[in-house]
Each structure stands twice: as structure tokens, then as C-alpha cells.
Amino acid sequence: MVHVKIWGSLRHATEGKDEVEVEAANFRQLLDQLSTKYPGLRPQIERGVSLALDGRIYREAWFTEIGPESEVVLMPYMTGG
Image (cartoon, rainbow, N blue to C red; front, side, top):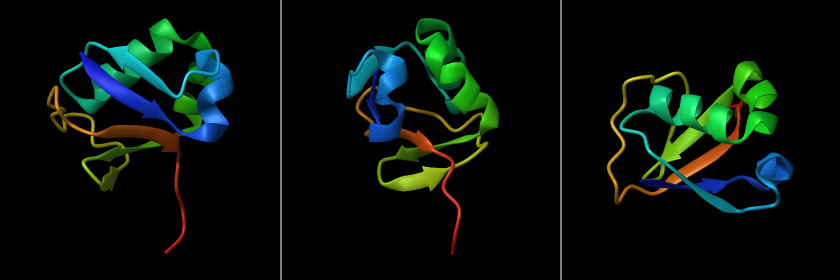
């Protein structure tokens, strides 16, 4: 199981939970599982999300492996520079 911390503005879609658990080995599986378990997240996932994995931010890195001890944070797509 992967423990996923949920960014504040997305918590409304996880019944207010700040952390959830899903079974996933990579970024794509994580998003698929979150969309299934928390359908309210699907619109944001379709618009775009970023994933912080052990302090590094990813977007569309579908096959990036996620270990069971990884720190994972789901957030809206981050832009800027």
C-alpha cells in the first residue's frame, strides 16, 4: 500500500482526509486507483496533477516507480519557474 498525502485544495474530494492509501507501483496506477476510490478526484486528475515523490515533483511520469516507504504528495498541477 502507498500512503498518499493529499494537498489541501484536493481534500474535499477525499472526504476531508489528508492522507489516503492505495495499491500502486507507479504514477499511472496511483492515479487510476485514486480516480476509482475517490471519484471526486477524477476531474482534477484529468485536468492535471503533480506528484511529489520523496521531495521531487513529477508530472506525467507514468512509469516512475513508487516504493511502499516513499513519501507521496498529490497536488494540483504546479506551474511557474
